[in-house]
Image (cartoon, rainbow, N blue to C red; front, side, top):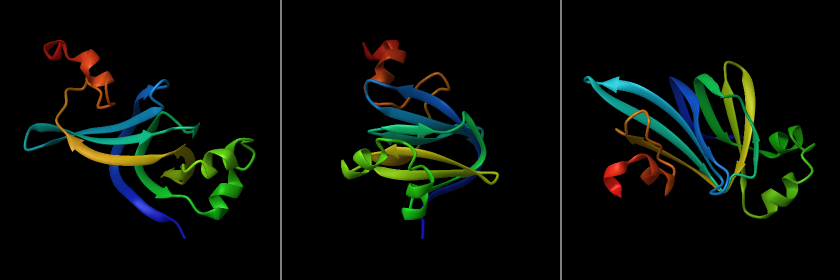
Length: 130
């Protein structure tokens, strides 16, 4: 059985990826009481990506043994999983995608559209922080 981490009907997009930090950021922006809100989904310790660039509604689960068998063709998958990473299954409109990462963190913020929430990198986009 899969463990549900997040379910949203919002449009979610592949917002940012930092290879050197091994972090992937998916983001959904929407308005609440005329104030922009971002739903940020940050995967850290990313070792494998098998995904699309946008989702019309999204469910994220921690994968199970059957899911691991589905992507077993990745020669290093067992190595990554044994190193403490987890398999995350992303489902949108019946399609399944996969991310192997150390963890996933979901947060809500009010950052501008141009600003990432990836650690360290967010200061690169904010001149006032220098």
